[in-house]
Length: 91
Image 1: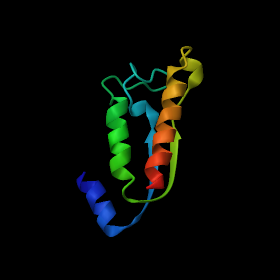
Image 2: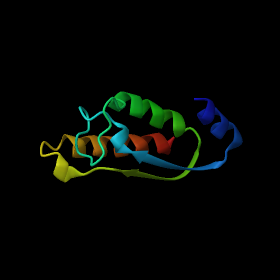
Image 3: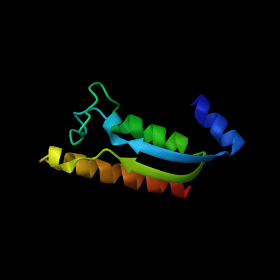
Image 4: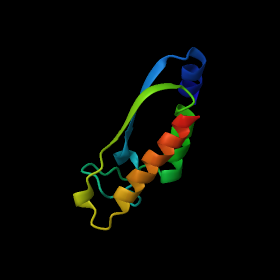
């Protein structure tokens, strides 16, 4: 949060990239680079809500590989992350 606090205080323009492969494979198996011991959805959501207090001028969400997850849970999770990002950016 130190970095987020600094970014908010300085109002420097920030481009935010969310790599979904940071999520634990139990929550997000549909990626080419699964990260064992990755963060939970709620941890990622908390990070998004913290960072979006800064001066976000652009953002992207990546690392979804739906063909690697036949259940569709990864696609649903990616959509939820994007929705939460847009809501947080609305401020």
